[in-house]
Image (cartoon, rainbow, N blue to C red):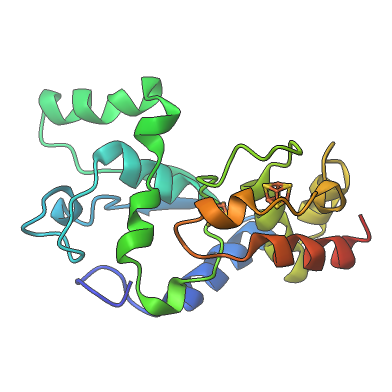
Length: 185
Ligand code: SF4
Ligand code: SF4
């Protein structure tokens, strides 16, 4: 996010890399999902606000191509903390708070977090957006997955609920129209 020591390159460059890996069938293991522990305290977080381990893990796992995370573990206590992810609730995994401290260039871009859910028309908004972004890069598998979805962008009733809920200010109503046009459904 242009800050700290670990996040080199722009947000867009990194997203392109994740999508390319997914397209080419390269699985990503995320090292340092807590940015060396920096993200876990207000004092050290490059955003000035801490996140929980569960939020950091979910954020990493939601990125295209990511299969696993490998946090550093100092002992049993750390391990038990990390394993709480396995039984965490959807609320605990929700990292949409980062929408409040996301740099300008990440605004308006879907990060597939699904904070805008539930959709009254039953669309899986994050997944639809992920398949769309991947398909546009030539990922035929993502296209196939999209074509097999029970609910697609054509089912959007343009209610605007997702636009109101999205912390990243994505205009999802317009995006659904664009996605429908692209896939023809
Ligand atoms: S539209 Fe916004 S809230 Fe919904 S999945 Fe995308 S980034 Fe998350
Ligand atoms: S605008 Fe479309 S995608 Fe968004 S919540 Fe309403 S029906 Fe679902």
